[in-house]
Image 1 (tube, rainbow, N blue to C red):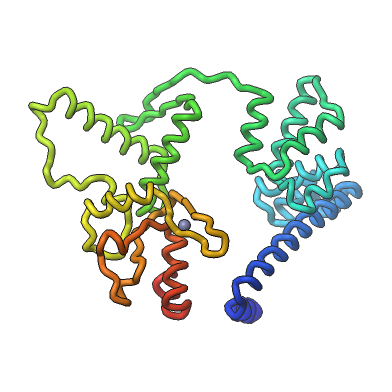
Image 2: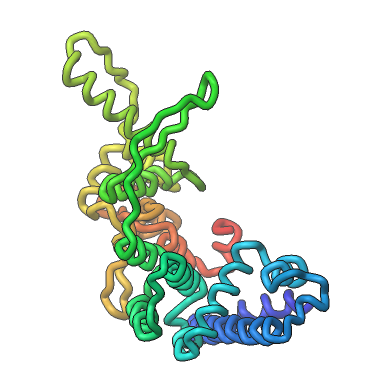
Length: 317
Ligand SMILES: [Zn+2]
């Protein structure tokens, strides 16, 4: 089996070789994308999709080539942009503009056209220059600024006896808080919905207000584990919540791993775990000074460096 040989070959590579392979393969992927766009362009020019009995290139892409709807749409949007502005070929080739960004740009150009305010070629190119190397989220924000939407009114309506639908416009700062809470809560969970974060935030807020206003009447359960204990995953059960808190504060709630090559601290706040600086297997203790906060990736990386890939593989996967 070819895949199997390839997997074995990759396992033999050192990290430097692996990074080079990754770079080369990403470039090949980008080249392949561009090549697909040119082939689609030629198929469209000849209307060859009609020979296969499809009414448009879009249906051809989905039914005949097997693309999902979104993927087909992105390729056709990128193709339109490329036909209109051949100058952007280099930007696609070098990965500075991706299909997602091109799709967003193209849909903005079409929207302007529909509203009888078509953009000149230079204006389009200027927009695309600005969007180089931007993430989808950043480009989305860019276009929202160009064509601000009306902010909808808050709406709450029952769907059935147990469920309501809430439509609400979130200021960015609130949306960021929700994302941050989801990230902190997500340390032990694979997927979190916005509703989970809202529910948790409401519980905590209600608890806090009740404490404030009804302190005398309220019985606070003494066994309640502080939230931080839940957030921090650790492979050792015997680290007290108090110690976990001290570690969290000392390491400022971020990954403390420092890359020895460039002295750069990872600083990730995602999936944080407690790591033994000297591993337990090598006599390391649960003492505060032997513990540190690291992200899962760096915890696993440290373990692989210490014990070797062969030993760690079955724990990691
Ligand atoms: Zn890290």
